[in-house]
Amino acid sequence: VCPGEIRRMLETGDCPSVAQDVAYKVLAAGPQEAFEAVAEVGALLRDADSNVRSRALQALSALAHGGSSEIVGGWVNDIVDALGCPFLTVREQAAQTLACLVEDGQGGRVVAGLPQLVKG
Image (cartoon, rainbow, N blue to C red):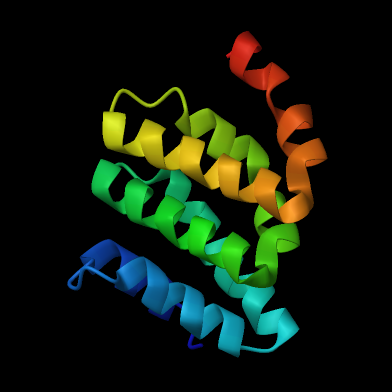
């Protein structure tokens, strides 16, 4: 995985399976590369474009299902923040991503991140 490659893929979103493509690339990388790639995806959760945020959340969901839920769990606070987004597609994808994390054993982290939603 080249630096910036994941970001470019999610920003352009030029194919319908971009989230799965990103997940495949990350899961095929070594542990350190995977961690850095997930950080690239996580950084896009604050992108101004709601489509980019939605694709980033889709990629995080795919990664959680692919066995990287512990790394993705590190982005719980940002995923919870996305629940407050004015765009329905982003909110729905955030909820789905949190559900994936719960299914994959990160429920404690998700529950720990929820109080910020009430404060926010």
